[in-house]
Image 1 (spheres, rainbow, N blue to C red):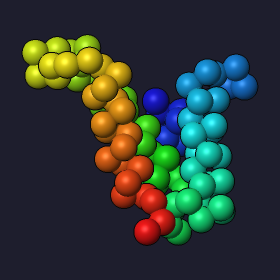
Image 2 (image 1 turned 60 degrees about the vertical axis):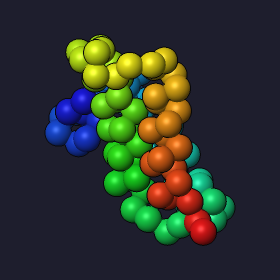
Image 3 (image 1 turned 90 degrees about the vertical axis):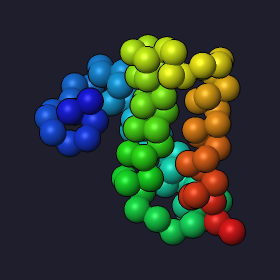
Length: 88
């Protein structure tokens, strides 16, 4: 994760960096098309990345806290975050 958030160097074959770059590019496209309000692309991508990975981490380490289907919880987190970014 250090590489993704600019605290190290990435390699060309790092799937995590590739996934994050894809997310950041997708956020930029959403802003460009007006689907997202004008926001900082990098910050929005970081929030989406952290939100989904936070749910996954809690599901793994504190399963009793995160009851329910992991996919449903990730979908709910994504919806909550994306609603905040949407152009109203």
